[in-house]
Image (cartoon, rainbow, N blue to C red):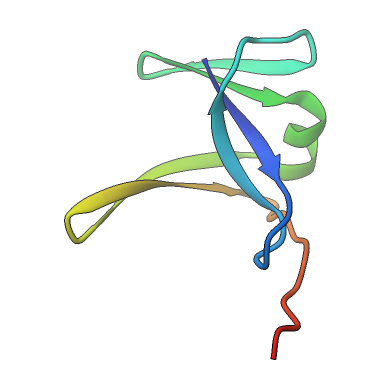
Length: 79
């Protein structure tokens, strides 16, 4: 199963990411196109709907995880 998590830290602040994990009682579980997706219930209430897109660039691709209610955090004050 694939768990959507809130990843914190770094210059960009908080963002959504995906990791492999097993379902817990605190997770919402969804079966989508043959994949089992997990989202912590508290995080899901905060983000609302979550979209995972496969984004192609040049010679590769990556996954983009965005939510209906964006997660914010951190700021860069580098000079």
